[in-house]
Image 1 (cartoon, rainbow, N blue to C red):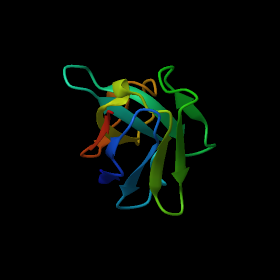
Image 2: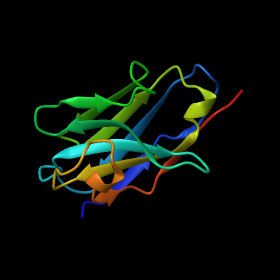
Image 3: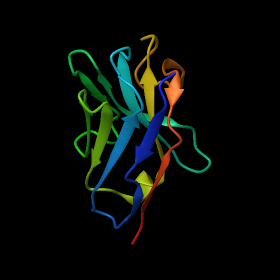
Image 4: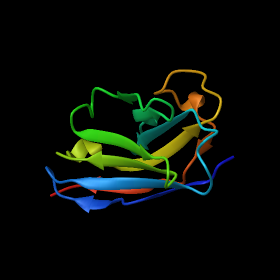
Length: 125
């Protein structure tokens, strides 16, 4: 497994922006796909965005398309999620995940074999 550590969460007012980071303790060369998920209280964990480490193809959920941007810095072994125009419904624990097998759909939890511990994002006035 490749330990992942998220950072950058916090509290922000509606309409504000936050940037999350996910640092891998080692190289991500063996990883096919990296993703961001979130889980709000009482809800299932949902896939938000993913990026293929080879080719840089990105995927987004409709709920965040146009507001969130996923990127991957290969040299720094770090995944980012730039979030803007945040809404109260974006409040959740955010997780990054790595897929070393490349099976399943990008937004499915079962497609990923390594998870970070999560970072809280709260959007409130």
